[in-house]
Length: 146
Image (spheres, rainbow, N blue to C red):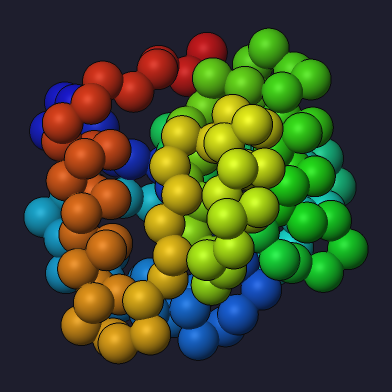
């Protein structure tokens, strides 16, 4: 990834504590990021379709998606993304509290790129965010937004 490129991240998360932790972890990074936050799957889809209050929303380079959110779940977001050619290429990292085997299987069957269980320990949480940054923002080649 080019050094001058700002990585656009969409965080779909209903826990304000987890939003704050993610923001703090990203602040410690040497990678330039812009974090947009939505609190449920309905807002995530409005953001991705640039609707309602999100008319000027940037196209995310990667999405950090919680599974269990109000109104529209992370599973529903993944399913809807697969219906749109421009959205199904956006990498999605599911970052959730669930460790249920059925959630893991369902998520990958809906074409999520990664499934990560949120650590409870703050240091472990920061380490997970750093590993996401290292892999998705320094190692892989992300698709260029249109």
